[in-house]
Image 1: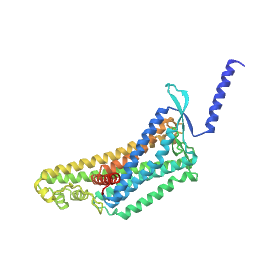
Image 2: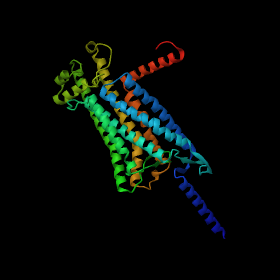
Image 3: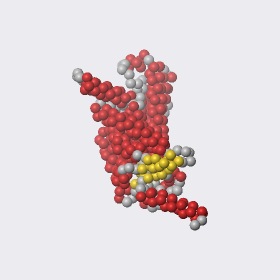
Image 4: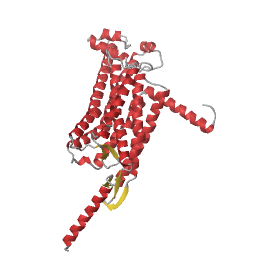
Length: 416
């Protein structure tokens, strides 16, 4: 027995011990800094808490106060429900697994202790969490695209397809059935559920060499990211185009001294291109949300008589119209940017892993951070689609005021 033989034997013994430990508990991933794991779990816990409060408030407000038109309200309610399901089921399971990590007692190259990261809910819990998050994630993406379609059909002129309340109900029902069935296919042998990144969150196995699994993954990428992205970009681009046309028509009327009221008759008369000007003028009549029909108008939302205001304050109205255009542009930019920030890193990483199974992003913290960024979409949606809308924001404040009164009555007595 030489020294070299002993060293080789000890190394082999250590490798066998590590392999046996991994085989005994395949859910454990060794070699992640616990501070990073706990930080990610803490951030996700805050995201889940904010998502639960925000989406629950939105659902309660929509059911009680009924702001916005019925079609848009129905779609946004379904969107809030999907986000609430993820925030109450999927994200807490990930957070619990993150905080269940154990110290290994070893020192890493940076001098910090490393941890055993473990999914604590077993294989059945893994499949359940992955199915819930995948189906609701696909549903949320589909609903974001449906919101843009509904707004496009409301704002743009001469649309033959009326987006009514029954239409919204049918579309949401179809999307629920489609996405739930599509996300359940791994239970029937097409692809499979697996841990992603450091192992505390789950999804389908992106690294695969099976042809059927590969096709399934590519189809999921298309239906869950690329198609919604195209629909959102196209619809909001057309909305912004028609809004700018309407403002240009108003500017022409304002400069030449014609009446400033944004009506279709006035704009058609003053426009050089009658067809385009008519479309733009119709847009200006459709940009303010109506309580019952859900239509939109770009007219200023004031309490004064519109006829008196237009007669005495054309310059003020002109500024309000321009401000409305800027606000719409900002909201559209925020919508598209939030979509990119939340979902693009996750999609890009998964595509890289799908086409290159040995890619560096297939395991570890590099694959976990994009997955956690995608989960922040549950917090983005109520902020963008509800808090940035004046009518919904007012309804939310009314709801909070009622809740405060109820709490005060509950603890201090009196009447509501």
